[in-house]
Image (tube, one colour):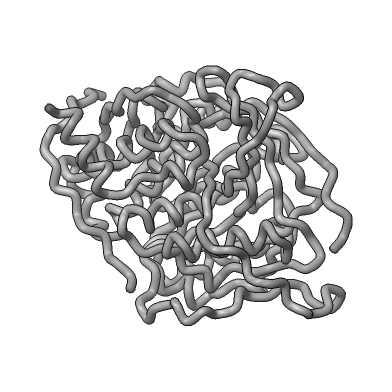
Length: 393
């Protein structure tokens, strides 16, 4: 199929605004398969821990601070939120790193914050530990205007941790601490289904499919969204060492494939899911395009992205920038495109306008790799537009 040249006109839509058990010890490590996210920074101290008995609580909601609005978030993101520890010096192993920067992360949470940074309305549904890190993460959502009504706290498990090594090129490897972590323990009964059903887009990954009870909660949440007519957005976000085996990861990732309306995937993930086939071959990519899919996106790092719909396909080139840390780039891209689609789903039928939205998303990803971590680097809408205009000039 012919790959079209990038357009140089910008007409992005304005998004909708909205007014203690022992610490875990199990860990795994892996080479990262696709550009993804992390974060950092908070401005307000965590609230004091409640004087509730940990032994008789499964989890609880974050106390209302009166900041929520009556408007329902346009995009609800479901899954994990955790702490990434990113080395302050690139190109060293975890053992050699002299220090680490605390960087709140978790792909679905990063997408939620990214959308809010772009001026859109978003919510996060997931579970963290009832610990200092968990409260810190809740405050980060609050500080970034993300609806956190669906966030739950587990008194019997810690907030997940991940240590991230950075090569001199800004690529990453992970060592996870989940044994189990709180995000794995979200139960179906703890879901805020009303929040999900009122959204325009429901976004999720595959990590929440790895273990029970979170797997059942994931399936129930997606089912409720689908039945309510909400668009389902899926980013597999493969983290292979977290799965029992490669075959199990492939089977579970594909088990929910045909229910998604929008799928974002990397070249490496295509190769993994197709058992080694060429991710640059359009016929290979088309094998992953199921009959009900509205949009399949393939990210190519600094090269931009490819897009596939039933009626058209092509490539949109990315912005060339100096890479510091690729953490968060994929999530920034997803936030960019979902923020545009949440304003106007008719973009899915209009190739010219879809290409403009993808240029915007590519720029979101490019700006994010210029800083360490994801949330501190996630751009505002004005920063993205400025970068695109500068690139054209």
